[in-house]
View 1 (cartoon, rainbow, N blue to C red):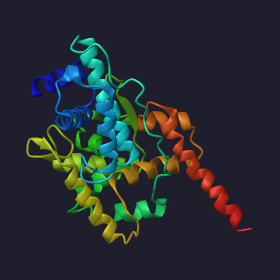
View 2 (cartoon, one colour; view 1 turned 30 degrees about the vertical axis):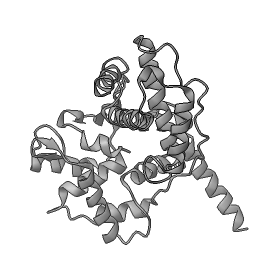
View 3 (cartoon, rainbow, N blue to C red; view 1 turned 180 degrees about the vertical axis):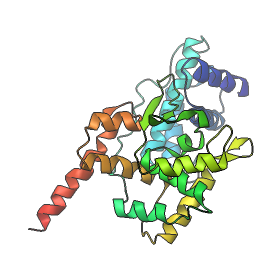
Length: 283
C-alpha cells in the first residue's frame, strides 16, 4: 500500500503540480480509504467506495461527522487516485464513476470591520512586538492565506514598486499582490531590524509554524476586545469584503486573492447584498 501511495504522491507532485498541502491531504485520505476497505486495489468496486463514504458521513472514519467540504475533498482525493491507477494500467475501470460530490451550502464568510482591523493591528506594540504586528498586518493588507504568510521569503518582497510575490503552486503562475501604503513602513522596519535570511518570519532555519501565527492573532483579538471567532482566514475574508464594498471590480479581487474560479470570489458579493437588506429593514 505504501509504495502505491508514494507513486501516486510523486505523480501529483511532478505531473499534476499539486501543492504540498494538497499532497498531504490526498495521501491521508487515500490511506484511510484503503485501510477501511482492506482489499487489493484491482478488486475495489464502486460499492466499496459508497460504503466508505457512508461510513465517513456518519463519523465512523474520523470520529466525527465531517462537513460537506471534507467529504467532497475525499471524493476528489479518491478520484485522482483511481484516475492515476487507470492511467498507469494498474486497474481497468475507475470505481469512482458516477460518484457525485455532495451539494455544498455556501456560507457567507465572517469578517471584521475596518475599525476592528485597526484595533487588532494596534494591539501590538511596534517596539517589542514588531514581528507579530507585521505578520497580522500582512494577513489583512495582502489578503494572504496563513500558509502563504509562513512560506513568504525575503526574495518575494519588493518595495519599489511595493508588492509581494506569492507562490501559487499547482503549476499556476505566481500572483503579485500590491502593498498598500499603510503596511509598507511596518514591513520595511521589520525587515531592516530583524534582517531575516530566507523566510520573512523565521524560526531557526525554518519558517514560523502556522500555530504560532494563530496564537499571535488570538492574543491580539483578546487585547482588542473583539467578540468574534477570529481565525487567520478571517483577515483574508475582511480584505476581500472591504475591497468589494469600496467598489473594486470582482475580477480584480479574484486576481488579488488568487482564486481559480470567479464563483469562489462571488461569495463576497453576498456580503454587500446583505448590507442592502439590512439597510432596508431600518425603514
